[in-house]
Image (cartoon, rainbow, N blue to C red):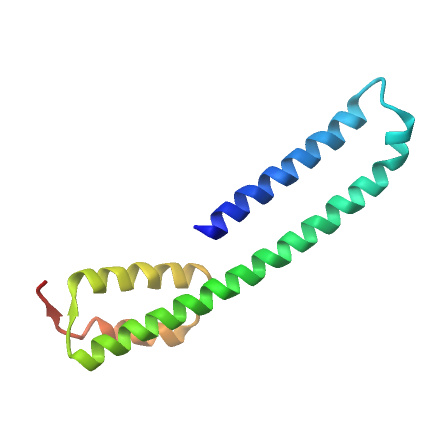
Length: 123
């Protein structure tokens, strides 16, 4: 959820900056001072984009690590108990799907095969 809010905020910032630059360029009565400052504005925009892109990469790695940790934790608990509830198994699979979409590796895939073999306890 937090990552989605950041992405929408970043998208809005980039869109706003692009609109300002476009307005400056397209304005027939553009102030020459603004036109001279345009390269600085574009450089600032590019630097902000790099910073935001880096932040998003860090957040994705963090989310991936968190998902891996939670999947392993939930698997270990179910294995130790000797059962898993249908709800827990469904939640586990939803998180696993997200983990794979984020680029997760095959380690958790092995756990997926094993967690499916754990008996389901009725809630």
